[in-house]
Amino acid sequence: MSKGKSTQSVSLPAYQEAQAKELFQAGKQLAGQPFVPYTGPRVAGFNPDQLRQFQATRGLFETGMEFDPLTGLQSLAQQEAPQMGQVGSLLGADIGAYQSPYQQQVIDQSMADIQRQADIARGQAQSRAIGAGAFGGSRSALLEGESQRPFIEQMARTSAALRQAGFEQAQRAAESDIARQQQMAMFAPELELRARQQQAGLLGGVGSIQQQRLGQLGQIGLQQQRLQQGALDVPYGEFQRALGYGPQQLGLLSQAVYGQPQNVATTKSTSPSFLDRVSGATDLYTTLSDVFAQPPA
Image (tube, one colour):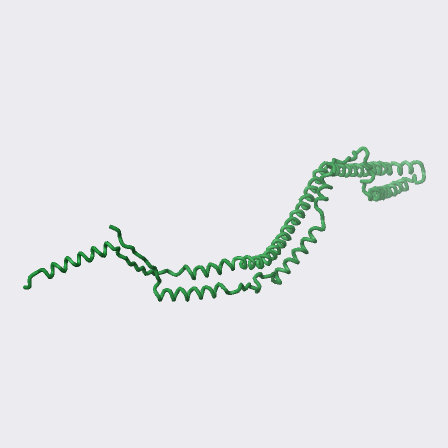
């Protein structure tokens, strides 16, 4: 037995079809809008305080680079090691240069004091000679000579002692001076090395300051480079937006067409075959025959 044919039709509800058309028109209008680039400022420049800081930093850099510490360090490195100097001995020293300039005055004053005592003793001897009636004779001369002899000896001892004391004092001064010179000559190399180390430290400090100022100048350049890069990124970003504008608008239009959920109404109809119609008619005839064949109640 062959079966009948069936047909199926799909349709949107009327209200949803109207909404879809309205949404499509709105999406089409939105997708047709022209691209409008942003033309306002988007990169902030440097303020006056920053510009003054840049200028001050450049000034510090220029003044700090006027001196080359490397040249000074090379000069120190090329110098010979300090040596201990030669110091004269006491044998070659001029002792007279260390004697007191007042030594002769002291000797003269001492001799004058002794001479005054000698004159007093001579006068006393003459007085005794006069008293003895021997003034002007050999006995008087003998008495005067005897009175003067102790003073002459005292003068000699005093002069020799004073000269000896002056010489010894001058010798001690010479020895002290030579010892001081030897000590200075001994420590001179160490002091010279310390001075060189101190100078090298100062030169190294100058080099560190120069490196610091060089880094500060580099920071200024980095800030300016970032500002310039930001100014370049703005038009490039607008260019990228313009490239993506078309696909973006197409996406809006696609959403307007396919984004609305659809409530589909399905209608199904079946067409019976010839045999089905005959069979149905036979069944109807049988049913009606049974109804009319029954006796009336």
